[in-house]
Length: 186
Image 1 (cartoon, rainbow, N blue to C red):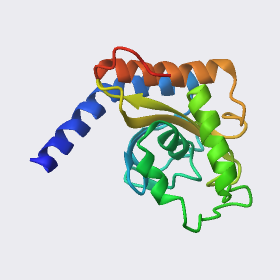
Image 2: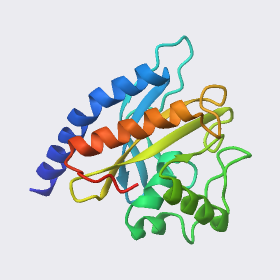
Image 3: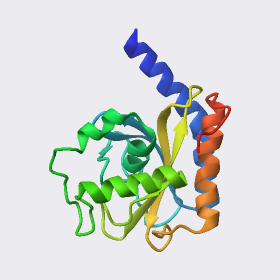
């Protein structure tokens, strides 16, 4: 039953998210990624690739760590408190020289994410690459996924421009509304 329910939930999420992801890619010219929240990180469920000679993508099925990804920071900010179990009391992987492995700094970054409703993670997983993520909520206003654009710092800067930020937030709200979230919590 639970496995069947999980498949059904993912299918509905994918169905509702796909058109918004295609539109987000069109609006931003960056790869759009849909990820789901797991106890050990954020798993990439689907991507819509940018149409460019050089692509920055994370393959579906990849598990991104909470501390070193924009998606992970969104999960920690809006998800259940037990997600912190995956980062507290453990050695955090330093993927790049810029990867934050300090818990106090991570807590401050997550609080900033909670306040503003989105996260970035410039050069936290790969040098020269950034991601901009926003939360997706279900009908109960519970976090179920994230939507993200990823690209070079040239195209997805640490402080995203207003039009890029608006496009990602609009996609997150649209998917949330399609899943029955009548009042987007952010």
